[in-house]
Length: 453
Image (cartoon, rainbow, N blue to C red; front, side, top):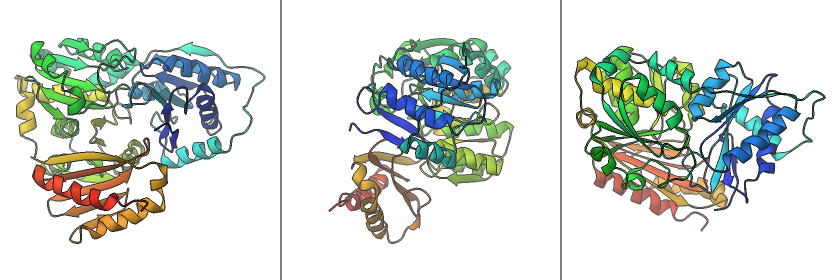
């Protein structure tokens, strides 16, 4: 659907129609109006339209009298690190994340180097919806090119047992998806002494598959892992804030397994609180319970997870879409630290442990995800009424409306919520068996189908 999606989480649309350079500049100007004095970092993933948007936004920032720190192609977590390293007032990442190539978008960062809180995002949204004339300073700012990949990797290396990984020297295969992830990944693998094969390493946005790192989208890439003789396969999304993992044999263990593997690595060294969102697999909570630490639950959305992590002084957190957040590196979902933590786990004890064995040690759960395109009209009263019907369809479940509707019933839970970045409603269910998860989704879908009728 050609609809500009604007929310407290950012902006996303189809290039040339719903999203133009003019729209992007207006959104950037709304953001600038909420920032304290200081320079602004601009980064982008590898999409072909990214440079155009970066140049247009940079011109507006310079005209407003602010300096621009141009990170060019950079992973989303790298942009957060650049904001911190240069003491910037904020940052803009030009990316449509996992959306198809015709899309692009913008993610906004505060001076803390994290995505904006919901409240800060609302202030930007309000200004964007009620635009005012742009600020033109008497003295324009300057533009400076910066590269944060080396700093990003240095922070990650300080977080993991580098010597253990170097001793084992695991062989790595990575699909960077023609996005921004290869920039820091190459440096990481070299520093860790890994023999690495990188597919899609040119950040040109010429995606070889649908960019969201799901098993369906990656099926054609999986055989390349065994063909390369690698010990592990990694998959990044275009802006490299999400990570999926596969075994040496090319078995996809998925995005949901990424976080519990990383959490296991962290808690083995540094026990402490963990935070996940309400759509994340229960595997992570089970890993936390094994280590005797608390696992808190937030609403869906990186900003909500980070808020909860700060409130609980969490040592690790993230989302089940493959987003690992390590506060010692940056308060942003980060595939680079995710890969390093999985490699550390594989090399613990000085002997190579297979990803297959690590994944099999995780609690067995069956998760099913689906989405329904309902359009903007279903986000208001129609969807609220559907939530009531869905809740009635699960009379034995406990209900939470922290974010959408989550229903917990014995060993099964189902979450129904409208996406912040796409005109869809997502349904996620997890249970002990595939059949039970399918039954939960079917019940929720049947009630949802009556929206607007």
